[in-house]
Length: 120
Length: 110
Image (tube, rainbow over the protein chains, first blue to last red):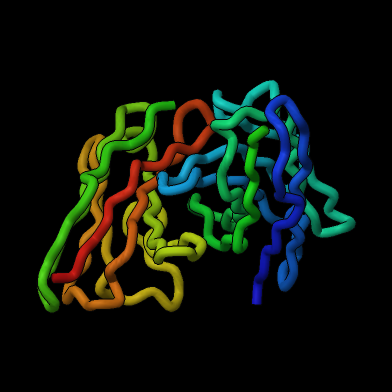
């Protein structure tokens, strides 16, 4: 069974930094593009960032570009989201999600999410 | 990166069929057959139920189906059941090599 497990969330002050991790199991991690999607409390889903299987191509939502950095270490089956200059509006549950290996496009497997709270 | 437009809520009685619309632009929904739909129950992670406009992942009920016309995609839930009460989100790949979600639709089973 494919599983994704996020960690690294917590309470951080405005302007602070945080690094989220997403560990994959039950799959050949290096074969799949991945992404991050967040959900503010009581709000809808917002795509944040994505990275291709090899890690050489990265993509960002306008709301986080220049402040967040996505990366992956395929030797550790792990994807990261480094977040800088955090703002109150970044408060959300952050989900990591896997994209299909071939053909088509979607986020087909999701982690359980990790909560990030930006507050003083 | 404007969100796709979904109705805030849709309701139906058990056994009925309901349709949730998802309107985008010629730069996302209208440009690619990469529309997906997700079901989310309270406190849970989203679950993929439709991808590539109308394909169902293994294990997803045949009561869920999808379609697209122009810049608008649709999710149809037939034979509505109590367990279908949840939030539903559409998503599309975009011309900017990004992804965009809809605002979500709350489905209520009367």
